[in-house]
Image (cartoon, rainbow, N blue to C red; front, side):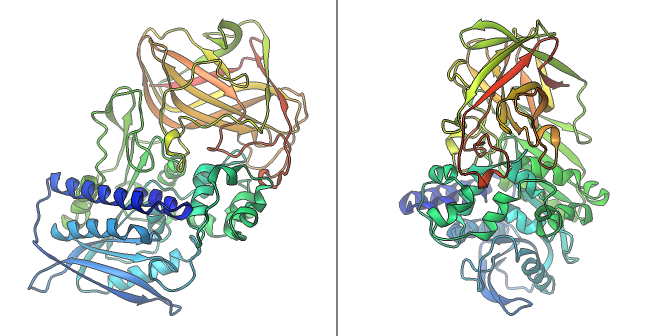
Length: 581
C-alpha cells in the first residue's frame, strides 16, 4: 500500500493522470503475478462484491466495500480488513480483494471519513480510532465473518495500530508494515523536521489540490507561513507538527500522539511488523516493537529487509538475490497461519544483512554487538579533500569549514526520504572533496570482513560561532575500486545535543562533545574496503535546513553563515563507533 501513498502524493501535487494510470496497471499486474506465483491455489472460481454506507456512532456514514468467495452454501470466511484514506488507489485495492477472495478469504475495506465517498470532513488521524472501532465491531457481528485479521502499510498500518488495543474478539492478528507508533521519532531528529516525507505528505493530503513546488515549499521561511503563502490557506495539523519540536512538548505527551505511542503496551494480539532499512518509519516501527506487551511480543515478528517505503530493494552497490520482498506471499503465509489454521506464530526478529545477501535471526532486540570498534578522526591529509581515520587518537588538531544555510548539502542516499525517490537508499556517493563544507575521513583497508549490526555513532568535539547549528554524519563503505556507498546518515543540533529531549543553550565558540547517531543497520563490510565518514551541517530535503539561529526551526525568518570547527586528536578524541558482531 505504500505504492498507493506514493501515487496519491503525486496526484495531489501535480497532474500526472496518464503516468499514474500506467503505474497503477503495472502494480495490478505485479500483484496478480505474485498471487499466481504463490503456493496458494485458487479455491473459488468467482467472488461477490457489494458495498454500503456504514453508519457510525455519530451518524456519519463511511463507504465500505465487501469481497467474499462466491458459493451457493451459507458459509463464513476468515476475513482481512483495511481502512484507507487513498481513494485514487481503489483499483489496486480491488485486485488484492479479488485474488484473496479466490483463495478463500473475505476482504473488506473502508474509506476514512471525508474521502473516497465517505461522509464527514477529512482530518488526518483524528477520527480513525473511533471510526475504526465502530467498523470492526460491526464486522464482528456478521455471521459471514468467521474471524478477522487487519492488514495495512503506511497510513493503512496506522489505521490498524490506532485501534490495536480495542479490537473485538474475532480479530486474531495484525500485519502492519512501514509505520510506527512513535510519531515524534517519525517527525524529528534532534529538533530538525523530516521535510521530504511529512511536508510532501501534507501537500498531497491537505484535502485540497496544492500545485506548489515541494522544494520551494520546504525552503520557505518562516516555514510556519508556507501554508498561507503557497498552499492556499492554513493547515492547523501541519502547523502543530512543525512547531512542536521537543519530545517533551505537550502535543506529543498528552493527546492523540501520546495515546498512539502507548497502544503497543496495551495490545495482546500477534503482529507482524515489516520494515525496510531505508524506510522513513523504521525508527518509529522499531520502538513499536520494543514497546509491545509481553503477551503480544511472545507471538510477534519483526522483519527488516533492504527495502524502501515501497518494499523495493534500494542497495545499488550490492547484489540482492535473496532480498525476497513479496508482500503478497508473506501476507498469505501470515493470515493462513493465524486465521485459517488458527495457530499462534513463533516470535522472530529477522533481518537482511546488506553485503552478505543473507537473512539472519536474533532472539531479542536491541541488538547486542560482540564488541565496538573505534575509528578516530585526524587532521592528517591523505588525499585532496580527505583526512585519515586512525586506530587511536593522533596529535591534536582542528578542521574548520563554513556552513551557509542557503546552500545546503542535497540528500543523496538516505533512509528518511519519500517524495525524492531518486535519493532513497544506499547509493553511490561523490568522491571526497566534492564540497568545501563536507569534510571526509577515510580509514585504511579492512583486512577481514566485519558485520556491523546495530546503531552506528559518531562522537565529535565541535564548536561554532552561532548560538545554535546542526552537524551531520554520513558513514560509507569505500570499495577497492574507489566507489563509495552510504551505510547510514545521522544529524543533530547543539540545542538538542546528546539526546536532550528539550532545547538547551549553547555558548558560541565553546567546545562541546556531541553524539550523532543513526538508526540500526545490518551491513557486512568487505575485506579490502575502507570506512569513510563525512561530517557536514545539512542534509536537505531529508531534514529542514538549520538557520544557525536558536529557537523553533519553523519560525526562523532569516539565516546566517556559521564557522564550524571539528576538534580531533588526543585532547579531543573525535571518533566513529561501529557495533561489530
